[in-house]
Image (cartoon, rainbow, N blue to C red):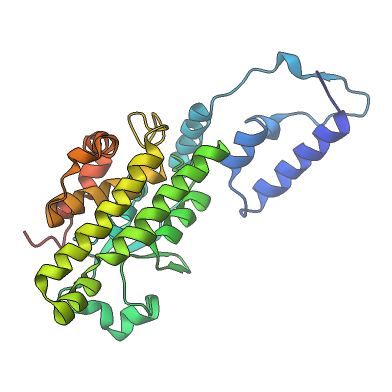
Length: 289
């Protein structure tokens, strides 16, 4: 197979232009086009380059190289601040993701029980008065799904979305089920409203119904793709959303997970991860045990 030299020249110039301006993650360009475009000599129109002798470079090795370069760059300093509440499963997702990516951050506790989310200072960060909120320099993001996508696009070490389109979509779908069709229906403010209107017993029944409905859908969705984790051998975004949701469902709402064997296996795998353990509610500085 012969590569058209002018095309290679165009790709190489595009790479150099992109990585010189810090608006495009170097890691992704390398993952798509190969890790060594920045070191190739500028081809002439008389060149005849044979791609059949190219040596494939695994994505894992490129991820490792990227992380090593970031660690070696003494000028890079994380400015991430996470506003979190120890019992919030949405905050738990972000703590888990930050740990997986190896990103240090400043933890700022927001006591939901005391209503600290309604202060004027916090309202400037999130007018909805919810945690988590992530601040990265001048960037403020106040939704866990949006935060995960932001981290994925801007901190490319340890990707939480696979490259393969179908698996990528599956991870996004699973994460969306948890964040849109499950957790909002049993969040603290909703359950308090339910208790005031219809009583404590009804609020528990409401929460269990929607949690089990979501788990039933996820069990069917992931059965064909799950391995050790939700979509195979690696931890991805689906796991980051699933694991905290399962923990809350079992501890707070006494959901019997034996009826969801695939999800139970995924959760057992996540529980063994040091990054998950470090992100657990009881390990947070504001934990009230």
